[in-house]
Image 1 (spheres, rainbow, N blue to C red):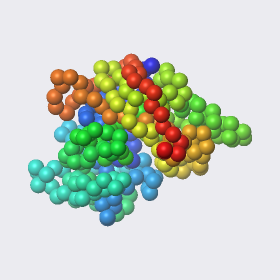
Image 2 (image 1 turned 90 degrees about the horizontal axis):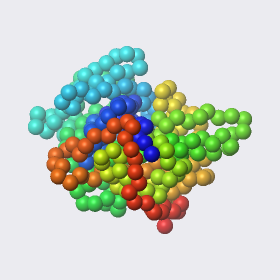
Image 3 (image 1 turned 90 degrees about the vertical axis):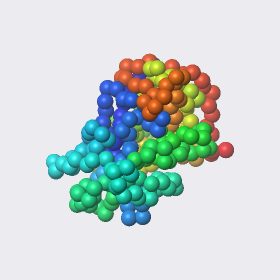
Image 4 (image 1 turned 180 degrees about the vertical axis):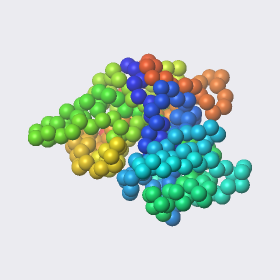
Length: 291
């Protein structure tokens, strides 16, 4: 098996970057979802509520700074706010987890408000601030502002199988869904369809990962990531019928990186397109009803 896709999402629910290589940190790929938008109550905002987020193109700049480009071509550069610099902290929330993130400068907030709505742009200054779900992780594991876990893995074989299920359900024709709909961090080719559901521990290149939980899917998978258009009930309809895990329509598996022996600091290692993928432990079982 081989690593054929790497994706980083600098701002939660905005457009992706697809580098040839990415540094792995304990809380995810370097630069992945360290920024997000929060509403007036501090709750995260995603394409679930506002599909227009996916049309804003981010880029990572030196020092953790960010640039954002709107569909109309307007662009802004946003320095990374921090506690050390005296920037204000906001209490924010992602799926019930409440933690603190630093607020971007006023100019960035005005830019966001004019284009997307009454939201605040915040930066996760301290990547240790948000623990992962203790039911599926070890004490000390943390995550960025991703939905739940540091990395999301998908496989091309499972996408092919899903597209076949969708085609069978729509004999008059249906678009072939691209992998971008599922917003993975790592994409693996060469596996059997749905094989990832049984993995417990894998190696990608020189790094190892715990495979901790299936990814329950939402309306974002029905959204064209290039146009922002909602495209109907697929793939949720077919996943709900044919691939339910833990009471949810599921596609992909969440990963937590393991620290290599002797490695200190935030950078655990680097993933590169073409890296070999090996299953080290399998036998995981996830029931449809969550029991």
